[in-house]
Length: 283
Image (cartoon, rainbow, N blue to C red; front, side, top):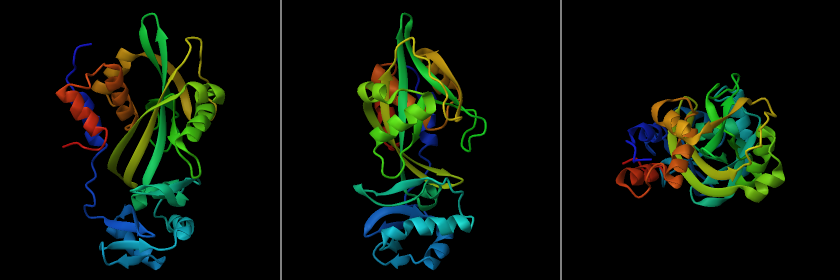
Protein backbone atom coordinates (compact mmCIF):
# COMPACT_ATOMS: atom_id res chain seq x y z
CA UNK A 1 0.00 0.00 0.00
CA UNK A 2 1.29 3.47 -0.81
CA UNK A 3 1.97 5.89 2.01
CA UNK A 4 -1.42 7.26 3.10
CA UNK A 5 -2.24 10.79 4.10
CA UNK A 6 -2.08 10.44 7.88
CA UNK A 7 -4.34 13.24 9.14
CA UNK A 8 -7.16 10.70 9.45
CA UNK A 9 -5.01 8.75 11.91
CA UNK A 10 -3.40 11.67 13.73
CA UNK A 11 -6.82 13.06 14.67
CA UNK A 12 -7.43 9.99 16.86
CA UNK A 13 -4.09 10.47 18.61
CA UNK A 14 -4.83 14.15 19.23
CA UNK A 15 -8.29 13.26 20.57
CA UNK A 16 -6.64 10.98 23.15
CA UNK A 17 -4.08 13.60 24.23
CA UNK A 18 -6.19 16.58 25.27
CA UNK A 19 -4.75 16.93 28.77
CA UNK A 20 -2.04 19.44 29.65
CA UNK A 21 -0.24 18.38 32.82
CA UNK A 22 -0.42 19.60 35.40
CA UNK A 23 -2.53 22.43 33.95
CA UNK A 24 -4.95 23.58 36.66
CA UNK A 25 -4.64 20.27 38.48
CA UNK A 26 -2.68 19.77 41.68
CA UNK A 27 -0.05 17.02 41.88
CA UNK A 28 -0.82 14.23 44.33
CA UNK A 29 2.00 12.37 46.06
CA UNK A 30 1.59 9.09 47.90
CA UNK A 31 4.42 8.23 50.28
CA UNK A 32 6.44 10.88 48.48
CA UNK A 33 5.93 9.41 44.99
CA UNK A 34 4.07 11.40 42.33
CA UNK A 35 0.93 9.40 41.54
CA UNK A 36 -1.81 11.67 40.20
CA UNK A 37 -3.19 15.08 39.33
CA UNK A 38 -6.31 16.28 41.14
CA UNK A 39 -8.96 18.73 39.98
CA UNK A 40 -9.12 21.73 42.37
CA UNK A 41 -12.86 21.14 42.84
CA UNK A 42 -12.11 17.82 44.54
CA UNK A 43 -9.43 19.19 46.88
CA UNK A 44 -11.78 20.24 49.74
CA UNK A 45 -13.26 16.74 49.96
CA UNK A 46 -9.81 15.17 49.94
CA UNK A 47 -8.60 17.45 52.72
CA UNK A 48 -11.65 16.46 54.77
CA UNK A 49 -10.59 12.85 54.32
CA UNK A 50 -7.08 13.45 55.61
CA UNK A 51 -4.94 14.42 52.65
CA UNK A 52 -2.53 17.22 53.48
CA UNK A 53 -0.93 20.05 51.53
CA UNK A 54 2.49 19.30 50.11
CA UNK A 55 4.48 22.49 50.46
CA UNK A 56 7.23 21.38 48.08
CA UNK A 57 4.94 20.73 45.10
CA UNK A 58 1.98 22.95 45.97
CA UNK A 59 -0.21 19.88 45.71
CA UNK A 60 -1.57 17.20 48.03
CA UNK A 61 0.04 14.35 49.91
CA UNK A 62 -1.14 11.05 51.41
CA UNK A 63 1.28 9.33 53.76
CA UNK A 64 -0.75 6.14 54.34
CA UNK A 65 -1.49 4.35 51.04
CA UNK A 66 -3.60 1.76 52.86
CA UNK A 67 -6.29 4.43 53.24
CA UNK A 68 -6.77 4.83 49.48
CA UNK A 69 -9.47 2.18 49.22
CA UNK A 70 -11.61 3.64 52.03
CA UNK A 71 -11.12 7.18 50.69
CA UNK A 72 -12.36 5.98 47.31
CA UNK A 73 -15.41 4.37 48.91
CA UNK A 74 -16.30 7.59 50.73
CA UNK A 75 -15.94 9.70 47.58
CA UNK A 76 -18.29 7.30 45.79
CA UNK A 77 -20.83 7.65 48.61
CA UNK A 78 -20.63 11.42 48.14
CA UNK A 79 -21.44 10.98 44.46
CA UNK A 80 -18.09 12.21 43.11
CA UNK A 81 -17.74 9.19 40.81
CA UNK A 82 -19.56 6.02 39.79
CA UNK A 83 -18.06 2.94 41.35
CA UNK A 84 -17.06 -0.02 39.17
CA UNK A 85 -16.82 -2.40 42.14
CA UNK A 86 -13.40 -3.48 40.88
CA UNK A 87 -10.09 -2.55 42.47
CA UNK A 88 -7.15 -1.33 40.39
CA UNK A 89 -3.56 -0.80 41.46
CA UNK A 90 -2.38 2.79 41.93
CA UNK A 91 0.96 3.38 40.26
CA UNK A 92 3.53 6.09 40.72
CA UNK A 93 4.89 7.84 37.66
CA UNK A 94 8.19 6.00 38.19
CA UNK A 95 6.58 2.55 37.88
CA UNK A 96 6.64 -0.44 40.19
CA UNK A 97 5.75 -1.41 42.82
CA UNK A 98 2.12 -0.26 43.10
CA UNK A 99 1.48 2.29 45.83
CA UNK A 100 -1.98 1.07 46.79
CA UNK A 101 -5.35 0.22 45.28
CA UNK A 102 -8.65 1.97 44.66
CA UNK A 103 -11.92 1.45 42.80
CA UNK A 104 -11.39 1.58 39.04
CA UNK A 105 -13.98 4.35 38.68
CA UNK A 106 -11.89 6.64 40.91
CA UNK A 107 -8.77 6.57 38.71
CA UNK A 108 -9.82 9.57 36.54
CA UNK A 109 -10.92 11.53 39.61
CA UNK A 110 -7.37 11.38 40.95
CA UNK A 111 -5.64 11.38 37.57
CA UNK A 112 -4.08 8.03 38.46
CA UNK A 113 -2.49 5.86 35.76
CA UNK A 114 -4.76 3.11 34.45
CA UNK A 115 -3.31 0.03 32.75
CA UNK A 116 -5.19 -1.83 30.03
CA UNK A 117 -4.54 -4.73 27.66
CA UNK A 118 -5.54 -4.97 23.97
CA UNK A 119 -5.18 -8.00 21.71
CA UNK A 120 -5.11 -7.96 17.91
CA UNK A 121 -6.70 -11.24 16.81
CA UNK A 122 -5.18 -11.78 13.35
CA UNK A 123 -5.94 -14.36 10.66
CA UNK A 124 -3.87 -15.04 7.54
CA UNK A 125 -6.10 -15.97 4.57
CA UNK A 126 -5.41 -16.50 0.89
CA UNK A 127 -6.67 -13.00 0.12
CA UNK A 128 -4.55 -11.36 2.83
CA UNK A 129 -4.52 -10.45 6.50
CA UNK A 130 -7.79 -10.19 8.44
CA UNK A 131 -8.58 -8.93 11.95
CA UNK A 132 -11.24 -10.08 14.38
CA UNK A 133 -13.32 -7.15 15.64
CA UNK A 134 -15.89 -7.10 18.43
CA UNK A 135 -18.91 -4.82 18.66
CA UNK A 136 -19.48 -3.57 22.19
CA UNK A 137 -22.80 -4.37 23.81
CA UNK A 138 -25.40 -1.60 23.61
CA UNK A 139 -25.68 -1.46 27.41
CA UNK A 140 -21.96 -0.81 28.04
CA UNK A 141 -21.32 2.25 30.20
CA UNK A 142 -18.55 3.52 27.91
CA UNK A 143 -18.89 3.72 24.12
CA UNK A 144 -21.85 1.34 23.69
CA UNK A 145 -22.15 -0.21 20.23
CA UNK A 146 -18.67 0.89 19.14
CA UNK A 147 -16.24 -1.45 17.41
CA UNK A 148 -13.55 -2.89 19.67
CA UNK A 149 -10.74 -5.42 19.77
CA UNK A 150 -11.33 -9.15 19.95
CA UNK A 151 -10.05 -8.89 23.53
CA UNK A 152 -9.46 -5.76 25.61
CA UNK A 153 -9.85 -4.73 29.21
CA UNK A 154 -8.33 -3.18 32.29
CA UNK A 155 -5.73 -4.80 34.52
CA UNK A 156 -7.28 -5.39 37.97
CA UNK A 157 -5.32 -5.00 41.19
CA UNK A 158 -2.85 -7.79 41.79
CA UNK A 159 -2.68 -8.99 38.17
CA UNK A 160 0.05 -8.51 35.60
CA UNK A 161 -0.90 -7.54 32.04
CA UNK A 162 -0.05 -11.09 30.91
CA UNK A 163 -2.42 -12.55 33.50
CA UNK A 164 -5.12 -10.01 32.63
CA UNK A 165 -5.02 -10.81 28.90
CA UNK A 166 -5.54 -14.51 29.69
CA UNK A 167 -8.53 -13.66 31.89
CA UNK A 168 -10.09 -11.25 29.39
CA UNK A 169 -9.53 -13.59 26.43
CA UNK A 170 -11.44 -16.39 28.10
CA UNK A 171 -14.22 -14.16 29.44
CA UNK A 172 -14.80 -12.03 26.33
CA UNK A 173 -14.12 -14.37 23.41
CA UNK A 174 -13.93 -17.92 24.85
CA UNK A 175 -10.27 -18.10 23.83
CA UNK A 176 -8.49 -21.04 25.51
CA UNK A 177 -5.96 -19.70 28.05
CA UNK A 178 -3.29 -22.19 26.94
CA UNK A 179 -3.55 -20.90 23.34
CA UNK A 180 -3.21 -17.28 24.43
CA UNK A 181 -0.36 -18.04 26.82
CA UNK A 182 1.54 -19.92 24.12
CA UNK A 183 0.95 -17.77 21.05
CA UNK A 184 0.07 -14.19 22.07
CA UNK A 185 3.05 -11.86 21.65
CA UNK A 186 3.50 -8.61 23.55
CA UNK A 187 4.27 -6.00 20.90
CA UNK A 188 4.07 -2.54 22.44
CA UNK A 189 3.13 -0.06 25.15
CA UNK A 190 1.14 3.08 24.30
CA UNK A 191 0.55 6.20 26.43
CA UNK A 192 -2.01 8.99 26.41
CA UNK A 193 -3.50 11.62 28.74
CA UNK A 194 -7.11 12.55 28.04
CA UNK A 195 -9.64 14.86 29.66
CA UNK A 196 -13.06 13.21 29.85
CA UNK A 197 -16.27 14.05 31.76
CA UNK A 198 -15.27 11.58 34.48
CA UNK A 199 -11.86 13.21 34.91
CA UNK A 200 -8.30 12.71 33.71
CA UNK A 201 -7.54 9.45 31.91
CA UNK A 202 -3.81 8.68 32.02
CA UNK A 203 -3.70 5.28 30.39
CA UNK A 204 -1.01 2.78 29.52
CA UNK A 205 -2.10 0.22 26.91
CA UNK A 206 -0.17 -3.04 26.68
CA UNK A 207 -0.63 -4.43 23.15
CA UNK A 208 -0.55 -8.05 22.01
CA UNK A 209 -0.77 -9.84 18.64
CA UNK A 210 -2.29 -13.32 18.34
CA UNK A 211 -2.46 -15.18 15.02
CA UNK A 212 -5.46 -17.50 14.88
CA UNK A 213 -6.49 -20.34 12.59
CA UNK A 214 -9.03 -19.62 9.85
CA UNK A 215 -11.34 -22.13 11.52
CA UNK A 216 -11.39 -20.25 14.83
CA UNK A 217 -14.72 -18.65 15.74
CA UNK A 218 -14.83 -16.44 18.84
CA UNK A 219 -17.90 -16.73 21.04
CA UNK A 220 -19.18 -13.92 23.29
CA UNK A 221 -18.99 -15.26 26.83
CA UNK A 222 -19.69 -12.44 29.29
CA UNK A 223 -22.36 -10.32 27.61
CA UNK A 224 -20.00 -7.40 26.95
CA UNK A 225 -19.72 -8.11 23.20
CA UNK A 226 -22.72 -8.03 20.86
CA UNK A 227 -21.02 -9.74 17.92
CA UNK A 228 -17.66 -10.59 16.37
CA UNK A 229 -16.68 -9.69 12.80
CA UNK A 230 -13.70 -10.88 10.75
CA UNK A 231 -12.66 -7.95 8.55
CA UNK A 232 -9.93 -7.57 5.92
CA UNK A 233 -7.13 -5.42 7.29
CA UNK A 234 -7.69 -2.92 4.47
CA UNK A 235 -11.27 -2.39 5.65
CA UNK A 236 -10.07 -1.90 9.23
CA UNK A 237 -7.51 0.60 7.93
CA UNK A 238 -10.27 2.54 6.13
CA UNK A 239 -12.58 2.51 9.15
CA UNK A 240 -9.87 3.95 11.41
CA UNK A 241 -8.77 6.56 8.87
CA UNK A 242 -12.21 7.74 7.73
CA UNK A 243 -14.67 7.10 10.59
CA UNK A 244 -15.18 7.10 14.34
CA UNK A 245 -16.67 3.61 14.45
CA UNK A 246 -14.06 2.28 16.88
CA UNK A 247 -13.89 2.98 20.62
CA UNK A 248 -11.59 5.96 21.09
CA UNK A 249 -8.45 4.21 22.34
CA UNK A 250 -8.78 1.16 20.08
CA UNK A 251 -7.85 3.45 17.18
CA UNK A 252 -4.43 4.00 18.75
CA UNK A 253 -3.68 0.29 19.06
CA UNK A 254 -4.73 -0.24 15.44
CA UNK A 255 -2.54 2.64 14.23
CA UNK A 256 0.35 0.94 16.03
CA UNK A 257 -0.54 -2.28 14.17
CA UNK A 258 -0.63 -0.49 10.81
CA UNK A 259 2.84 0.92 11.48
CA UNK A 260 4.27 -2.45 12.52
CA UNK A 261 2.95 -4.35 9.48
CA UNK A 262 3.91 -1.62 7.00
CA UNK A 263 0.51 -0.26 5.99
CA UNK A 264 2.01 3.03 7.14
CA UNK A 265 5.76 3.40 6.65
CA UNK A 266 7.18 3.74 10.19
CA UNK A 267 10.40 5.28 8.83
CA UNK A 268 8.64 8.09 6.96
CA UNK A 269 8.22 11.56 8.44
CA UNK A 270 4.49 11.03 8.92
CA UNK A 271 5.05 7.55 10.32
CA UNK A 272 7.51 8.96 12.83
CA UNK A 273 4.99 11.60 13.87
CA UNK A 274 2.40 8.88 14.50
CA UNK A 275 4.88 6.77 16.47
CA UNK A 276 5.73 9.72 18.71
CA UNK A 277 2.05 10.51 19.11
CA UNK A 278 1.37 6.98 20.34
CA UNK A 279 3.77 7.76 23.21
CA UNK A 280 1.87 10.93 24.10
CA UNK A 281 4.06 13.37 22.12
CA UNK A 282 1.77 15.28 19.75
CA UNK A 283 4.02 18.32 19.20
